[in-house]
Length: 220
Length: 290
Image (cartoon, each protein chain N blue to C red):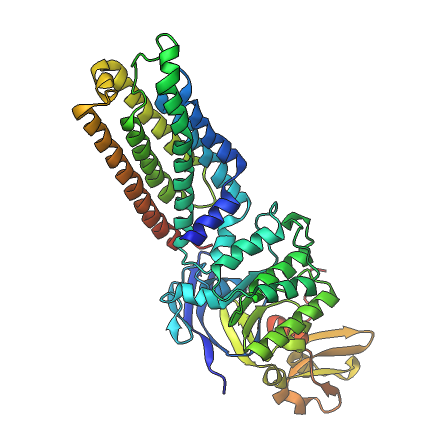
């Protein structure tokens, strides 16, 4: 696994993908729906996968001493890395927004949407797992074409994000609740984060399993 | 007697327009085996099936006595595979690809890798896209040879190489086979490569194994024939394969068992290329669109 991850990071993680991951720093923008900052993460896949096809990555990985299905495992590890990098990059900017920006700009701290809290990160982790689960097995049905699977999955995640944002805008009480960092509200937040993390890891593992099954049917 | 390191038994794979039919052959430890046949005969498909790049429909592929799918990682650790030249990651440097690749192999020999780089005159700082097609083949061979493979599966490893480089590569095959008991299965259209280094030949025709034998035994069934065309009877003409008549002289291939039918002609050992033409074209003599 370590070898596959190292191979993916050294050969497949393009600078463009890293730049797109860095855009999660946009979470700092005042009065902007925080969850939107993470949509760019999923756009990184639009760069990484076609680039891998152009570089004959599959042909290279297939001749390495790994099982055929482990080729998918490598790509899931790359996906997890991209999503994790994006989340990690966002954290200092999220803290800056919470502790400095919101207090210094009038109306910036109005909780008109989900805001910045553990629930946000739980949702982002869950959505990342969902993205991996839909995109990876679909992509490995025909690993030489990425357009359909990527466009559909990215749009689906965008729609889910919009729905989540809308819910918190329609119900400001919910927004206030998830932005309360004490008592039961904090417990719920931490639980959401934990569930999000479990979903992220579980759905990604399932994506690797299903993608591997798909790839085993494909002749390279 | 060397043991069979690779055994292919009744391998079948069906595509809409092509079929591998009951392909069976063995590769003995320490032997160099030429895998020949026309374009589209099934050489690459067979090699890809062995390495599980293509899913077989039925049949067995045994590596050291065990089904290769049961020991996929172990088998792939001990098999070196090359399809023509390296054409992946054109913007990466040789050293980057090599260092990533090295991590996957337990028995990667860095000093052998360095020696091979020197031998093939490869500059580690060059990017893949800066290599000529011959250099890409050499780099692919360097990767395939650097992890002490017990078996090398090479699909046209000498294509695109100049004669000197080809000779160097074939020398490497002979050395690695003798010193390490490495078994080599290589497909090629450069038939002279086989005469230079192959111990055995596996001939595949239209998805079926036509024969597997030593180069000597393979050649022993055929004779090159030549003489004056004016003396040839119609019946004799029918028995000559790959018959070519030019300026009153002819040459072709006959089966050895028919040599008594040609008492007045020069009969000698044929080249492998002539035999291949005989097998593929049979008595369709001088068939051209003109």
